[in-house]
Amino acid sequence: MFYMVCYDISDDGRRRDVQKILEGYGKRVQYSVFDCDISDIQYRTLRDELIAKLDNDTDSLRFYPLCSACYGKIEYRGTGGINEDDRFYIV
Image (tube, rainbow, N blue to C red; front, side, top):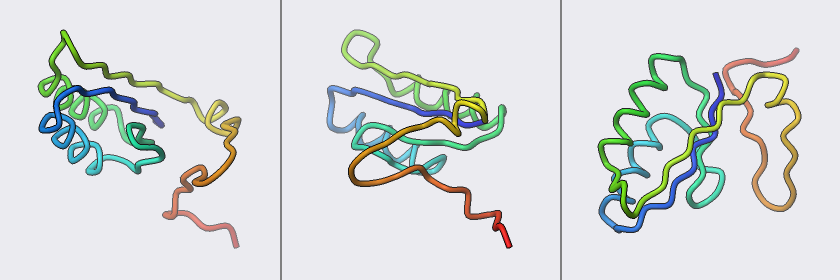
């Protein structure tokens, strides 16, 4: 399943921890936004790891699941782009 994960973390140390965790699961597309193409088990593990780092009074974390039909409708402008899965090639 494809997830877009967004965060707003107030503390520099917690923010670095969250970034490092997310780098193990996906690709950064903006400063505080990651695209993650992960299994259900990986999602639950990621979610639990990130929630453990949060301060619920000051931080924000969002997970947006995108089905394959929605993923195909992502529109972007400017730098960056939609991360392609490089495990598959069309010949």
